[in-house]
Length: 340
Ligand SMILES: [Fe+2]
Picture: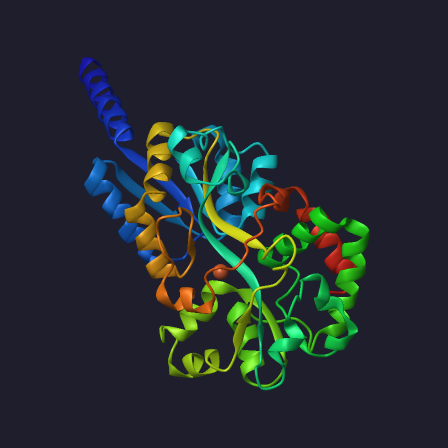
């Protein structure tokens, strides 16, 4: 009995020691470069990083089902709507309001529960062969419903969260009723039933199947980089980026971000990791690997991203926390418009 007691005590001791020196990330981001970044954090702090990668739904399900027993400290994903909706379910604790995080991240890109780590813009791409750049001057997301674009637009499906966040931002700014009308107009303008990922929309414009596409900024840079092959690189050169709503609130911005989970066993390490991700060193690593925009001011985006347009007006007025709050409404208006 005594022996077992000692062994138990030893196990408890070593478990608590290891807990104190690690952090467990549940990540829905699919970048190998994130792993290298976590290794840098370990070298710097001695805190071991364990990563569980998966799809958002599966990760969220596990975190909810395991509750207090879940090892997860941080949930990291690539959409503010997902973070906001998870927060609404009470899954985070106030872990994103440290002085360092507040200092690094503009208030519209964070809440007390989660913070943006990198930014992405959801923009319009056009075919310079079939669309005169002058005709786009002053164009807004709202204008995507203009009948002059009938049969000319491609955008992915309504089940895609990036689209849900974009539509949520329209509801936040224009109301649900107006946005419901807008969604109907946009669906009428679609060149085809929505299908494929963001790169597939850019490819459709390059192939002449549509004149306008909606997709996130980093996808064009990724294609231009050649990492997706010579064919996609050539296709990317056939389209041009356009940043909407420049005369108004600015271009729709989304984030990759993370929050400290309610039952995080290693809360302080989780906050340390979030703070590390917002340092110049980490931000440079992120933008040069994922082609996202940096969250902090003194880091420049990747050259391919800068070339797309640097000084554009970002929507800093619409809080990204509104995307989660309006997510259900967004999906409702999209489905009501028969957006596939
Ligand atoms: Fe993406």
